Length: 611
Image (cartoon, rainbow, N blue to C red; front, top):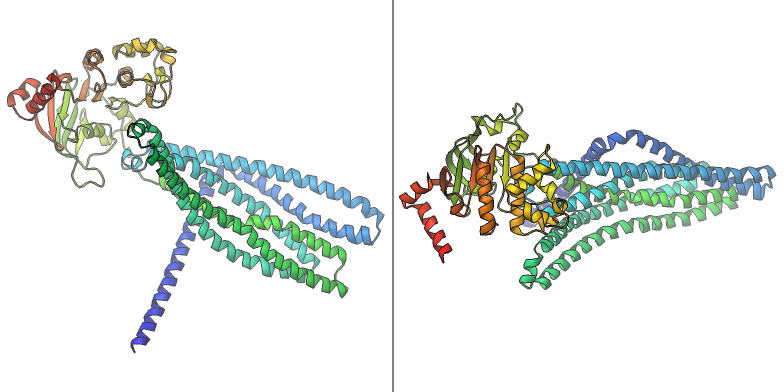
């Protein structure tokens, strides 16, 4: 009895496993078809006219390819055996004419399909880049920039090759196969049936199996390529640290390991693709052997002429190349599905920070900011970064935020710009909840200078004017003078037209910071957000910039984060933060009199500076 139960259980498990495998297959197939349909609908629709022309050209290619075996048959039966002098002239002229027509149609189809492939990929890359630029920081920061570059370059290109290869294979090669096999059946349906029974069904089964291997290997290979791209970017960016800590060999070893994994997965996909042609060739060999035997027997019986047999063999040989291309569709398609899945995952990501349907333009009357019981928690973290924070920033006043690292100061600035949205509470500017106003108008009203200034690999002038639409060279120079940057700029080889290099690599930390401050000065926004804006400056430069900032902040609402307390001593009010909460606030003198957190920070900082 127990054995019977064991057998039943085993059968049940086997049946369930088979069912699960089938279900997973159908899901993968459904996803593949959905992705292909979306690619056709979204990125190939603008090229429907060109695709129609390409299909016409491919019909011509298929028809002319199918005509050549017929000419061979006619040449042998009418010229070599029938000694027909008229056909001796007509057939060569017809062959040359058909060949020229086929060449022109092939050229036209190739040009059209390459244009469609390149154009659809360019549109896809435009959408992908726009999606990243407009995406939430919370989502974009979940992946390394190297991974995005890999998807942008490698995956999008792989998708282009899939689109071009699949359409050509279906539109040209499949039509050619139909034309040639149709010709085979008109000559001798017995021989044609042998070919279609042996090659086509067994080829389809082989291609399905190879396609599964290709899809898995391609997906893993693309993921490892992203890892490699990320690793190379980090290694180059941190090259000074790598060398300073003597980790060159370790970085090289890690790179080799990643490269080896990429190679392994790439070779798996290539082996699966390479196996497609030999599989078809082997099956075709079986068919040819059977056809020679049956054809020879029919010829001995007087049922098949030499011309018919040669025409059939010519068609058989001609069908091999398009059949091999069609056989590769499954493997090419699976590579494209693996790439498309990664691309469309990014395109389909929904933003958490968006404009409300009835969003209005932010109207700045005075520029007062009000944080009302603001609580914020980053995704994936158990402890809120901010907890019930209420701060009034009066219009035209300077409010400073101080506290240890991680106390929530920079998070407050990020929330003002709506890089993230508050979890609870609200932030208002002149009584307008920033979640109810247009994002562009909100960000036009603010100027941000961060602790780690970012400069684009462009000229100094373009970096200063970044984000400003209406300006003159005099405006740029005036902003640079206010930021104590003009003097070192004019000493550079090309002055304001000097390129700063990747992330401003050709400039010192203090020079980069002053250009970033000049950028904020030129923007001339009513609200200033300064996150450790003078942290990278030496004492002399800091004094120059601080006096410029003081002048700039007059009449503007300024929210300032500072590590050096000396830079915010004259702020209208100082808020001290700990663990995401405001623990005390007041003027510099009032906070010192309290002899609490701020006084402790002040004493420790100036004691260290005195040492």
